[in-house]
Amino acid sequence: STQFYKWLNHLMSLHVQTKPSNCSPDWETKVLEYFKEKLKDNEAASWVPSLNDVPVHYLKANSLVKFRCFIQDMFDPEFYMGVYETVDPSSKSKVLRSGKYKDVAECGHQVDLNTKNAVTLERQTFYCVPIPGESPWVKEISFSYSCSNPARVVPSTSYAPCRHKRSYEEDEDMETQPHKQKEQLGTTDIHGSGDPKRLETEAPSSLSNAASGCSSPLDLNFPLPGEKGPACLVKVYEEWELFKVNDILEVYGILSVDPVLSVISEDKDSSLVDPMDCTESVEEQRVHCPPASLVPRLHMLYAHRLQHNNPLLPPAASEGQSSSGFLNDVVSVRGELLGYLTHVLLGDALAAEYLILHLISTVYARRDVLPLGKFTLNLSGCPHNSTYTEQLYRVIQQLIPSSFRLGMSLHNMNNLRLVPRKDYTANRLLSGVLQLAPNTSLFLDETQLEQGQLDSTGVRNITALGNLISWQKVDYDFNYHQMEFPCNINVLIASEGKSLLPCDCHVRLQPQLAPPNLEQYISTIQVSLSPSLLNKFRIYLSLLRTLDYSISEEVTKAVEDDFVEMRKDDPQSISAEDLHRLLVVARLLSLSVGHTTLSRDRWMRAKHLETLRTNRTEQQKCVNGNEP
Image (cartoon, rainbow, N blue to C red):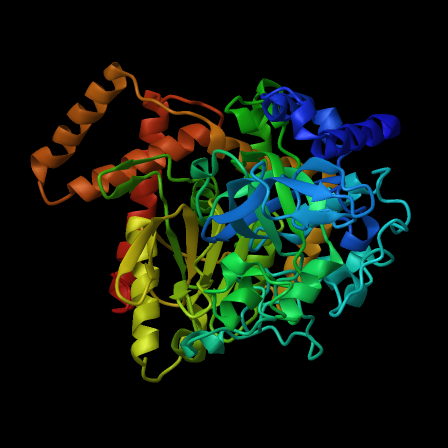
């Protein structure tokens, strides 16, 4: 495998450096097809080092690497020298060279800028960051896979970059202490204290620079506070229209960390800057050409959009196929998960049922403006002024590949930038907390609400959260207009009373247990869970989101008849909205046991759960006027 990896890099280097005049016209197509075929082999792909796990200074320049990432922004297309001609000063001989997959021309010889053989081509640049809110266990498992990677042996001696700024690995010393990656990597509460010596690659603990017209050149534009990891400029040469902002990708490409790029970014000498970039402002040049030691370049050879970022999920699931072996065991796994969450929810089995349905929900289609499949859950009755919501979030974080907890305090609502905004000075999209990857779990902690006045920013943020929940969209701020970005984010609202935000389902928590020390109680439950069973839970929750679902005509007719029958005695007893929720609950109940179609039994089970839930809500309404 080591030889295969070396040979793959060597072949790539040969094709990139080959004289175009000596190649067949379709040599580039053949090279790309070759790499795509080889990288479809999962075993082959496992030998390619990952920027997510291996520090940049352990990798050789111009080597083949991969990056699991999130498209945070797309820059304007750029022109580059696809073919250029060099002249040997002594012999005056001329050689045609390819500029593809490179940032800097080979300057061993003089470049002839007046030759008629030069060809200018176009490429697109994606600004990519690690997947926002990716759980520590995902990073741990991915890191453990990369530990056996032969590329990660010793730092590269063939390339010694002159860094003007520290890279994220140097401060964290991740090559000797990988466990530090586990400490609150972007999934912490917004109130996390953080390290006062924040790294240059860490997102600001507060997004207070939202009001400024331009952003700091050291701001790597991570959507979530406290995020760490490499940002990367991904250069795309073909079919870039297939990708869009907020996609998560696995990119395979050629690593470019030429020190000249760092010099250009800090020294704006006219002899170093591309004449075609002279119309850019200084701020735009800093953002679009940051130091390579801080933001390496990756020239894409092949990339595919990821349905999920769960490293435990069988590869076939990413192709829309389910693991039949695991589905045979899905009922028993569901039973174990139900028991586990019942303990976490202080003995409330009904709330645990609905929490499972919420965790496997996903937007599977859209009908006009209506997103189908979403299931926002409001879990009220959470104790105020306690650490319970924080403990509950940590349990969910251990189960879900990507998540974030947002404390809805007055300070956060009035000061955070939730909605991304276009910065026209730097010509980039300033990220916001709601710029998240598909299937991210957003935990809204409403128990932190306090008395006070929302300012204009707070009102906009609350409105943005309401639109996200109701329509699964975020309206990005482009100053002169708003642009709608559809999303697929699971929202769980933990509150004391009924939430002030809309929701698809409201469950009042009824604890059956009252442990004297909540933190110790939850910690004991987590410790008692075996790692193998925990991994089964993780596979279960991710896999069921990928299953297709349908309802037969026979069951559809039975549901319609049942709806008419329920309204016969009291037309006000059930509305069209109630029917829609019943159908969503029935769908999720079916999927939760591995069934991809609705049965009569599951329909009756959904009706029973909804009756229990609404009865509980009505009982609470009589006690507390704050509940509906």
